[in-house]
Image (cartoon, rainbow, N blue to C red; front, side, top):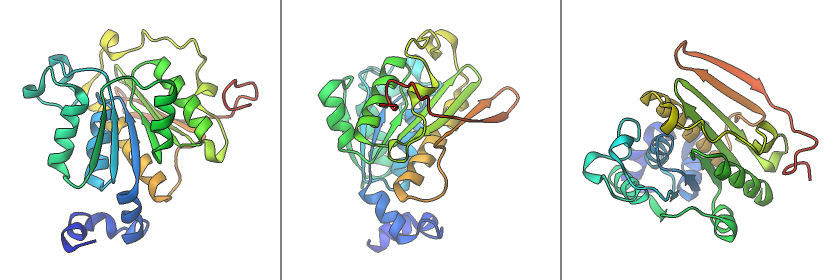
Length: 246
């Protein structure tokens, strides 16, 4: 690392859990971020600021005026632009050293497997159960850690599902007939909530990439934003889960 790089990341390198070795792991790390909306915005920005090597951003949507209340990686001048391209601009301004890969379509089948196989950590910032179930199944199959977050109205949740270490997967937590009516487009969401959950997803991803601390594997954190109360739920693997029990 040159002097400018050391200066940029000096506050992280000072942490004994990170140091030069951990920063180098981040620099070599590859993260797949699925959904560049309310959750994906802070995830992409914090991972870029922290020094992630490669960000693969996936989203088939375009920036809309209604997004700007919470999707802080975009701005008014980018309305109508693909969200991945808009986010890539913000990331490049924030940290030009980060390589950004943009996929402006929903990844399915072989394309999804290839993207996951090419990364070190997957961050699920999507807003529908079909995508969440597909990501979970592929991450279990390819043994990639999955950082899952969700936010709606005043409530948020976050967990980590790491197939490398066993334990429950996302399918153990939710049945396959999940209710897709629970979206912020139908129910609303308070702006800072997605920032809180997204920032925590970025933190979990950094811990996984640097192999430090204790992740949220086997635990689900649930936030009641109106009361500002956190609950921690212990998760167990479902012995009949069609995904991870096989």
